[in-house]
Length: 182
Length: 182
DNA sequence: ATTATCATGTAAAAGGTTACATGATTTG
DNA sequence: CAAATCATGTAACCTTTTACATGATAAT
Image 1: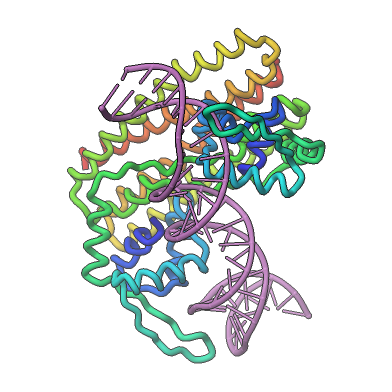
Image 2: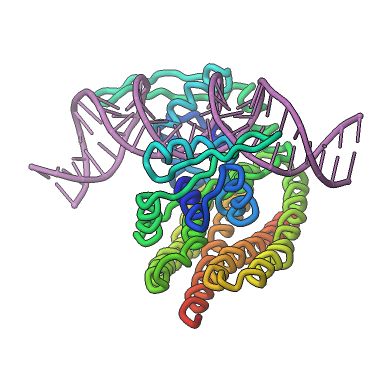
């Protein structure tokens, strides 16, 4: 799936692996992320598959840049991936729920303390989506009105993050209360 | 992390890999799952690490069973994992959000159609948590009152699933409307 | 002075999926 | 009569993380 993410970004403009990483970090990281090492190897394999081509741009006092460009084949692969209905099962792994599931075996106080910590984290995260994340999208749209169409979808993914974190905090409050009253 | 999940189950009673898989499927699968092949290899490596021991119980007309038992070391490993505050970052990957992020490039109708399909799936899933999943936990607790303590935590993980799916449906409705009105 | 940024990559290991192999019994 | 269940495991493969390696420049 990472390969399709990279295609998606390269469809806007040619980029280096390093730039792709930066783009992911500020836009898709809360639902899709990757390390640089993985991106570099993915790009290499995509080039072998004929999805992208690369050109080297020499630089001084820095390593040369390798700039990747979508091929027509890459573009059509991206299109099919976007259009075809997918099984859409990225089966979730949730470490906190796993630990909680077995937490009857430890002190209630330890559990409650950890849930309080989690609440701080997710309250902050909810705040991030509501303010900072929102503002970043707005800024880009103000600067590039041609991306208006994109904005609707970016906003939808941001909104998912907001609702998710709000739900998470609500659940933590419920769970803390159930434990404290029980 | 899978290894800790297996320790968690084995802490209740010795089990085979096959039984561990069955237990996961009916209890943790919505937040932690694994294939049989992965479970078998994990158990093997856990035995080498001294976290479990295994004994073979011969059977007729079926392959012999290999029953795994927690060692004191395994038990103490489980305890530390449960008690120690963890970084708790199972970084999420969410295929639908990834595709949506790049969906300005395809027909709006295609996107909306896919979101409608997703709504059906997640409405059903929400229903599952509210009725079936709930009933299963209740049944177990009715049969084994000694698991009352456990029940609180099982219920908490079930409730997360319920809230998550409700939030998901809400978000899908919002998103569909935004696309249709735009 | 140290840390962050820019920029590339390789190698080893861990985590996870898919496919292969076997074979009796039970259920639909 | 076909499919599911019980029950084990191995091998190949793919995905992802961690660690290694390099080196200049800019910021704190």
